[in-house]
Image (cartoon, rainbow, N blue to C red; front, side):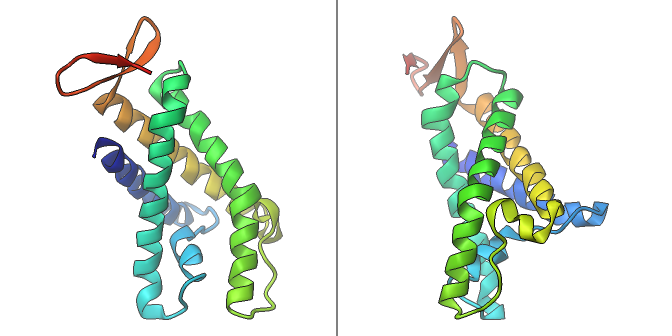
Length: 169
């Protein structure tokens, strides 16, 4: 439950950053809507579908972080989160964006051009906005998770369960 909650919190932080960046003059990146349009184009449901998928994906990556990444990195939470956020961004931009763009075009029989690798067909702005949003996700996930569940004994990551017995990973 802890990891799921941290994933939801981090996804909300990321989404807030994504929607605040255009107010600061940065390029708009609306990942929830973009992902949802693979499944629906109905204006009534695209928002709900996008938010649900975005929260699901954010929670999934939180579990990957908690089980695989955080126990192996011996950095402070904010640094761990930055590394994780940049890696997620690189994965999303190099694999996710081209695939989702291509699938969306096939599903909707569209001749629109996919944003391409690192969304560079849209210019540099969306890629940088996405980087900021993913770093915000990684840092908030790592800091919240680090305060709630992760401790360190002798420089090695551990989890403290309800009986307060540290378990080594």
